[in-house]
Length: 518
Image (cartoon, rainbow, N blue to C red; front, side, top):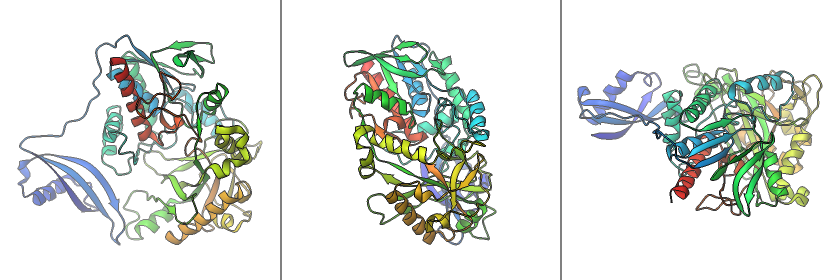
């Protein structure tokens, strides 16, 4: 027999499995020996009352039944069909694994390096500000999430089986706690090993993975894609091609525009990273009595009454650092990340506002690339060109941004390349800056001290999502004009984050399998 129940536990009870079993038995009216297994389904921390509590949802098994782990099942041999997968991020790798399960050989092509090779380029951009345009925090094996936090929570419940994605990560080495935590997180210190294990599994089961292989065009017969051509002169052929290049692959959008393949400008969001002391946040969220006993605190904020734009927090990183996420010279982009322990003394989050047609007007001559041109313009404006570190970032104390003045000095920050005192209001379009000020003001009312002398805004946060969508048929998931081409994941405009991208990769692979098998 199996039954799901919800428990409310004190913070000192959550890790006591023997006590939890006693509580479960009492709530279910069972003797302890009648319980054959307890499967944790969801664990979340509720701080809305003066005393924090944990909510735990479990499956209770009796009569000898037990929860069974889900394992990937792959055929002994692959069939004769192949699919090219452009991009080794979550959409690409999960698509590749799903293709293998269907007996289809994936050929994964990644412009960047493997996770080991990426580390050297990340050190170079962090310490010297020198950007490798194909190997950085956005490009390379694992995609943007590998070295920028590894958060796994999503609201994409209708896209597919989220638990399957999490179980796959566990199968390749992730902590089983990600199956339970409401805000699951792997961490940038552990995710690279998991990604490498996925790659090895793809290779062991008959797939191919090629690094430093940048796709520059499609091989076509009329309106059907039969393969791809690469910058190194190589050509690869397949029955289908999955395009899973990530939100920063601007060259792909330019290639589509040059060849007059259908693309569509898409709203996105821009802003900055706000950084606080993690201890301040813990005290604010948990109170003086409990803040040392609980995990690093988080927040999620949305401003109201800011017109059609909206202002919201994005990718909150407790116990994290701010990193340089530029993908080209002469541009400045920042992001946030945390390692698995989340033990930095800083907390940061993106605070961003929506931009759309109204903001694209200045770049209207570029048609569907107008949003991309706006993003590029902003990233150039924030680039300071400091020769001591080319990724030095403009920053202000939050109170000075709100008041529109340059800070006389800046407090300590996690951002290693360095900060310079600049009025960020003057780098944003006027209406964007105005929306961000309104949002910060509202957030400060909800979280006293959010704006003040002891917090910073650091720009530019511009890679929240892609400014271009590559349109596909809702039913077949193929590009609306190019047959056998499957736009997928964040870069195509259909997901946002690791889990939703993985789900999109799985769904596209299943559509390909249906087509081939029929």
